[in-house]
Length: 342
Image (cartoon, rainbow, N blue to C red; front, side, top):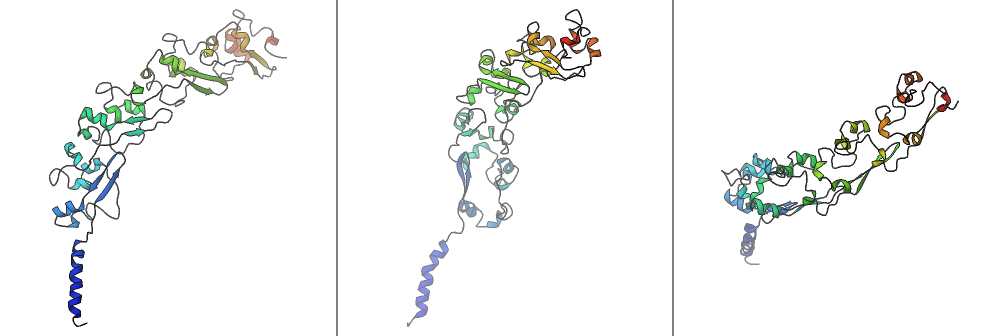
């Protein structure tokens, strides 16, 4: 070849435009769970800062230890908030500027609730009432902080998340109106409470919601979870749990007819082993003359052996001796064979 340097120069000239147009940076796409992704443009930012990568790397963005930042953190100067303060660049804290990064409409959020129907939160409905750019009404680091996981109804009633507005003043209260959020929700017909040594207690939502609202019981008296806290019959007699209403005034007393709540209750014969032979107590015989409340829990706890008493104690009016005193019923001092198999 006569002119090898001319040929080489031609190749270099042909390659130069390709090299100069090669792009080393690209847009960064941050995917969001409930909205369109946020797109960060290197081109726009590099053009403003004369292609000086060091403005952000590694001072603001550490490429080795990448992590997600919440809007609350950005408002405190982290991540994008280092520059987007309202002075150097538009502020991440200014509500009207949210759409400069968050384009498109946010999606509806579906919350699946164990034991109840799912709740669908519509951004569209709320923004139509609060204003198209009223994002910070909720996303302000106080109502929605980006750190919440599961929030209970009891917490909402104290002003957490949805409860910040749904307090009965700003908007309908979360303490009632369950069907407003839980679409298609029908209360469970009967809740059964399994009780060791006693027949199951049955609670009918259908009967109670015919007379009361959900908010009359939830969550002041009951949490939204069966068996969240156990109460004894003695507790109920003091106004706890069911006893808050079943006090003999608002509704029949919890110390009254046990079969109203324990429908399959059929107490049998109690056998007590003593040094004088077995003593037997027949519930069936006594229920023919008395009510459960005549003995429980003033005389006897709802547990066999809960308050042991000697014959001497009974002769002084304790235990069986409360009635078996020779006046109301035969005396415990009389024929021992009536109770003891001797």
